[in-house]
Image (cartoon, rainbow, N blue to C red; front, side, top):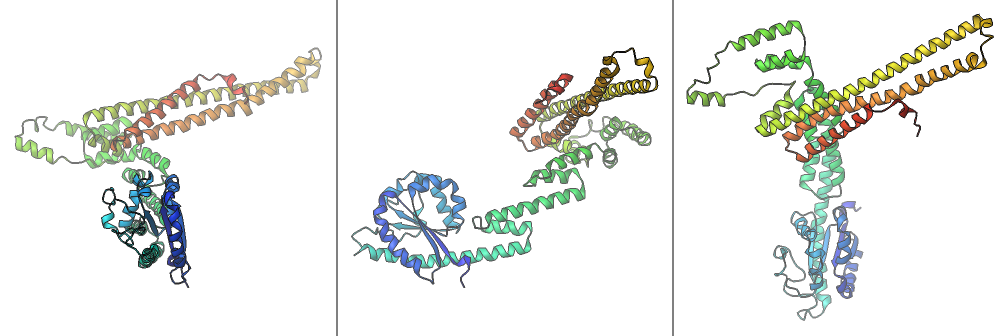
Length: 481
């Protein structure tokens, strides 16, 4: 029983001005199509003018096409699509065996005068004698030769399709990133291309993220951010980098591993562990005792040797910064430092706005508590000593406490939650701003000017949001939409 890969699909491209001669080809290919031993699934006839409007989807379509017939004539060769790079790509696909391109010499045309490599493509029935020429006793004779030539080509494509299916079965059985890569490298255009890319990307994404979590190092998170195709965990990866760089343990380990004064100062400036600070001070003092002119008065050979032997720092709490500064020139280093300082200042500003709203929410909760206390005391007094309230009007007796109670409930259950939404918004923006520092350093490492501009636009927008938010009056919370 024939399998799917045994069936061959044919697309025939022709010029609409040659349509009168198309019936001759259709009759002969109808016989080919009806032969049960040849397994032709379909033969599609499409004018080059229609194909020109449709070519934007050609990659998807060509994945299911095995043989493309092209009826050569001056009309077809002068069509706009034929002059485009899309038509030229059919030759490339023919050379890498993604499909078979079969030029059929319908009418006389100067093939050598074109910019296409017809010399390395077999032309049927002959590269010297068009079908509609006096060389043939009848066009049917020439067309019959074309049909006979198609059979071995179709068998070759059938063999290739079986190879594709066998390779796909092997790739899916192994189900590894490498197996799908090998499949796509071997068959760049195939019916399983999209599926292979999707599976490869999903596996690569999972592998990179699992490795990043397992090692929990800045380098592995950067590897994920650089190589992961789907970026499903990009936010988490950036946040983990921030946490590692902010880690006291990582900062101290950097100082111990590198035995460098700068790392001890870095630890002292950020953390306040008394025992470790004593050790840091001792190391700094020891470092400061080293001869200052040891390198300055060295011979030229010694200086050269010292420069070549300079080591790379083993750093985790400043790994990303170190990578960027080591790779950039002085101008780029200055730009990165200034932009990083702006990000850090903006982060403090966002956190300041967050604290402002937390204070505002706390104040309103306190006011609500005071009001509620006064109302409860009033109700208790009214219940215990009703005769003292007989001379008070109904407004003071009932409506005022009730109004105060409603105001208290409104503040507690509406106003404070609305302010807390702004607090949560500031928290999200603070996290986003922190993550842009990671993105900025990566953009400098990758020389991504567009990425730098996008990051700074995002930060500028956050700054404007914070200004508007801090100036937000309390009455705005009661503007129901």
